[in-house]
Image 1 (cartoon, rainbow, N blue to C red):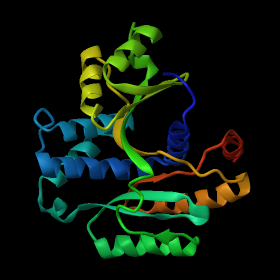
Image 2: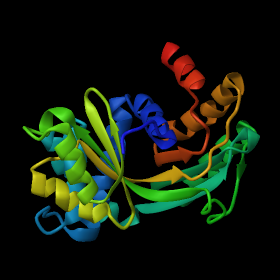
Image 3: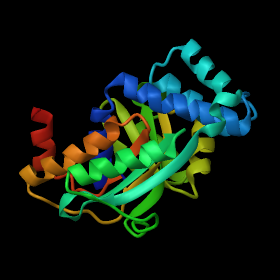
Image 4: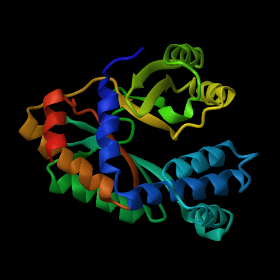
Length: 252
């Protein structure tokens, strides 16, 4: 189960870019607002809101900020928010899948199209990348929260909960499940008394595109530009994150 996976590298790279706390909070605030709008403001009866609150705590979001986001979801302000996706290609055939939350579709699609055009990419039609990405459950666990459970025993418990892969690090453990086992893993962690630092569905590439380091860094520029857009919640791509590329990025 342990091992070096391509999608985990993408996750690590994304985490590094998401270090800008304001961007992380912007994304989670929208998650809280939409969850409260769609399922009500009570986390005890709204699983989606319960998860969003968990992610907010993992990002050290202040309680009053969470409460404002939930209150907004209960009012009229949130009614125009829509969740949308865009698919396309960055230069050199790298697939890009974008998830956004917006109150103005025209603005968002114009911004996305503009970035694709400016950086020699192309906006495609929805569904065109369905064969490249699988939706997976990804759980990030702070190792300090696992209590007295030993590593081997924890791994067995996680496998029992539906883990397809477990990626160990000094500080965190990243667990991936199939889309179908996402809820099972939530239940397993609750059973173990472990509150994940973050819990989300991610789009993991089935195949990757390998480029030389210089070309790959140019491709990552367009990824970063998408991530900087306020409407964009997440960006997934299938660029192969080689050891050489990761080493270069760590030097920046």
